[in-house]
Amino acid sequence: MSKMLVGYPTRQEWLNEYNEPGTRKILDASLKHFDKFLIAIEKKELEFFEYVRNTNEMELFRIIGKIKLQLTEKLSPLSSKYYLGHIMTWFRVNGVTINETKFKREIRWNKVHKELKYTPGRSEIQIIINNCTKLEYRLFYHFAVSTGARQSEIISLRKMDVDLNNDIPSVHFLAENTKTKQERYSFLTPECTDLLKKYYLSENIQPGEQIFKINCKALQVQFHNLRKKIGHTEQYNTGTAKLSIHRLRAYTKRQLSRNVSDDFAHLILGHAGNLATYDGDNIEGLRKDYALAVPDLTILEDNNTKQTNTKLEEQNKLLKQEIFLLKKKIQHDEYFPELPPTHTNSHHPTHTDNI
Image (tube, one colour):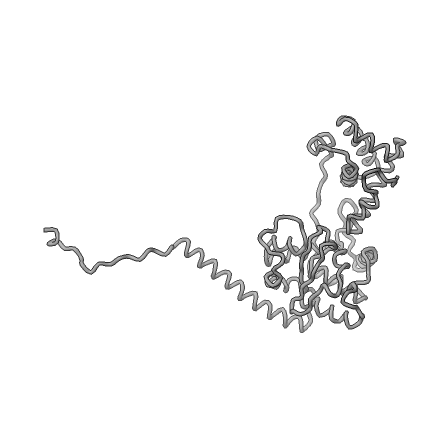
C-alpha cells in the first residue's frame, strides 16, 4: 500500500518528518488501519486518492464515515477518533481538501469521559531513580526532571550541548532535534550536574558524541519493567499506564509554573504558543529564573547538593523580598502620586490689605 503517489510524498518520507519515534509509530499504526479499509473496498491507494480528490463533498464525507465505522467496530471511541484524525492528515498530505467546519458537523462522536492526567510526586520519582541499577538510566531520569525535555530530545544531546561552566549548567537543544523545530535552552540542577560529572568519569565521551547510548525503545522497556518492580499498576480507563516517562515533564512543568510562571514553564518545556514575555536567547536571565525552581526540581539530596540548595534558597528569598518591596513601591506610587511642589509666599494677606 506504500506505492508512491505522483507529486505527493511517500509514506516513509511523511513519517520521517517526525522526530519522535512514538509519533511515527502512531502514524504508522493509523496507516495500517487505513490499509484495512482499502482492502475492504478493493482499491489501490493511488486509485483511491485520485477518486476522492475529484469527488464531491457529500461523497467524501460518506467515505470518511465508512472509515470511522470500520475503526469503531474494533476500537474504543477515543482510539477511533485519534486514528481517524491521523488518517485525515494523510488525506490532506495527498491533496484532499477537507472542510474543518463540515467535518465536525458530519463526523460526530459520542462524548468521551476524560480522566485527569496523572502527575508523579517527588517521592515517586525518588523511588524510580533509586530502583535504577544502571548509572545511565538514573542520569536520564534526572535529565528528564531537570530539563523537562522529551525523551528523543534528551537522547539527541551531545556532550558539547551542555555547558558545565556554571553552577546551573545550560542545555542547548538544537532546532532539528526538537518536536517543534525550535531551538531552545534548558538547565540542569546541581544534583543532576554532579551525576553527569560522575557519568563522564565512567564513560569516555567525546564532545561531538551523544551523551546517552540508549534509545527510546530501550527506555520504554526499562521503564515498563521498573514500573512493575515498584508496584505501580495504576491505569486509566483506556488501559494505559498512568505513570510514564512522559509524565515526568508534568512534574517539571508544575514546579516551574509554581516557582516562576506558566510562560516560563512553556518556554523551557518547548511548548508551542505565545511566549513573547520571554527572550529565549537571554540565557543568563533564564538561568536566574530557573534557579528559583531548583530546590523543587532536586530529587535526591546529598550533602553537597543540600549546601548548594541552601545557598540558592537564600538567594531566592532575597529575590522574592526585592520583588515584594518593588511591588509595594509601585502600589504606593499608584495610590499616592507625587504632588507638584507648592509655591509659598512670605506675604500673607490680612484684612487691612483689602482696604
